Length: 272
Image 1 (cartoon, rainbow, N blue to C red):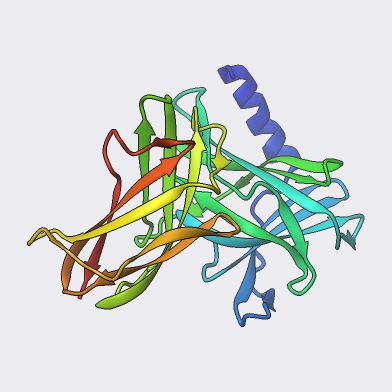
Image 2 (cartoon, one colour):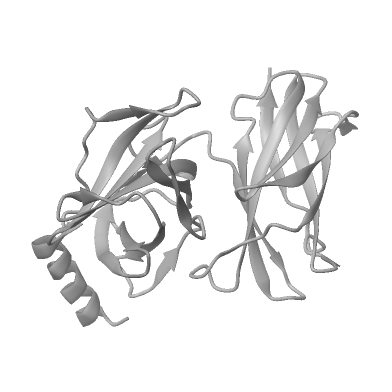
């Protein structure tokens, strides 16, 4: 994309599309007791897409649980699916990158939204902006709607590369957010990308955890390796049997090869 095209898109966005309408007073309760809040409204003509999330009043870096609501001429959609794509443009160049999202958001009748996740790799700032591309049933869409992303200090993800396959991978932690001494639930997602523009959710990897207390090179026992449970999530357990700084290494096998052979990624946890 050259700079002229980018400037043209920016002008169209500012004139035609509302990309960040915060309705903070609109709340909905999920059957699990979670409170969802409307954080983004993207409109074009008679079409409106809303993004709702739980736990924050904006999208944050890392894993975000989200729901979409779709309206055409004021009529809410309650079947089918939503697809969403996000691009970050850096104003100092014509390059952009994307971020992992749910492959397809299906309608959850109990919640009244099309549900799934969005993983944000970077916060927005004065030199770069995120733009969302919304699609309903591959029939109607709203494109290039700007939205903001905040920084979450609890964000934990790791990028690593399988040099033999020339592919990059992103492992994103969803738990524990506040680790405690003893057994903790461990959950994560895994995505594959050739270019950081296209991401594929990996659902069939084998993972093997090794938590080590960094100061003593002590490895705990009683851990359960993560297994895929659906929704992009792998779930297991980790044992922080002593306080201190822990590195949780994850050796990963996928497509009959060790994709972490060029350096086993680890996530750092501070345990009190």
